[in-house]
Image (tube, rainbow, N blue to C red; front, side, top):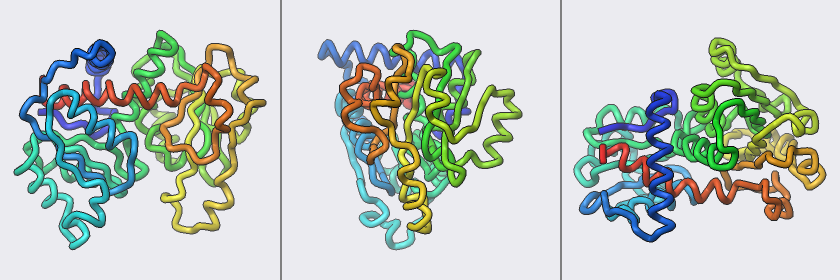
Length: 305
């Protein structure tokens, strides 16, 4: 049994094995010959925050592998959490019903707390502004597919770098490979927190903080756009002030390298003009598709299959 809680838990060998398994899952899906490795297993998908891609791709992954699904898509309102049940008690009850548990929660650390009392594997599908390890692994798979390498990648995270769990999750994985350079592009209200900057400095990471998108566009291999997350703001006026800080337009894309790719964890609001979708460098829908293959691989990883 293996939990997936944080990308810092993975060694380079772990990641290589997961990427290879993901490639095999993609090949099986495209050939229509997926092994039913989870036959007679039950996967619980319990989401205390809204989700489209993560929840549905996990459920689709489980179904393709032959598992059955039990789920709560609005667990904050439609489970006993609404009555005050703790995440630990919820986890103990899910252990009675399921062979593997996928949880998203708005509170940082809640998924880890659930895992501490669980005899079944727990997968963190996002805990507040902390971690989203399966998103980071599918992002890494996307970068490798698109660029044919993971060494010497220059990547810019743009928008809400303060609250971005894809950022916090992907950076440790990229640090497993030499030559990474990071650009963090944000308004002053959404810059990296001091504790994360200390982590980067202690890790001897080559990184730049800036509020100029145009400055970094010609330098990067990956442009990773992020949504300014309304749900992370307690004051709506603060959100309104920064929500349109960085909007990607055609004139920006013209400054990118020909081989650069544009990524986004989705959903987007208005931070990428939809006309850019037709550009072959727009990889965000391919990125989302890769989430299915990656989550198929991770379900098997957690169950040692």
